[in-house]
Length: 108
Image (tube, rainbow, N blue to C red; front, side):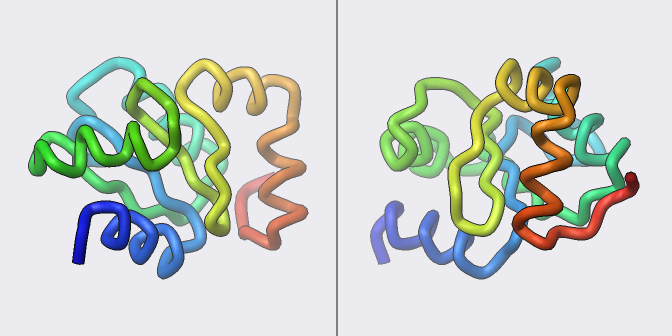
């Protein structure tokens, strides 16, 4: 299985996936921490994938999404964005609307 297939499988199997530097409990960059904090604040159940454990994954996710930075958030198979986009969506309540539309449970 190549890296794109692995990424697609991970995204397909999980409703909310965050590719980040570090883990949800111990993010290793401020941007990853910010997105984790938003998801934790909303009590969204999500899977955190540590790209620092696998160089092929770290580079592959950027190609897969055609997005140059990490973290990257996927909801129900759809790439939503990175840190700045997620923070802005959260502040404008757009993230909450997306979660609601995708039938993802979260704290309102």
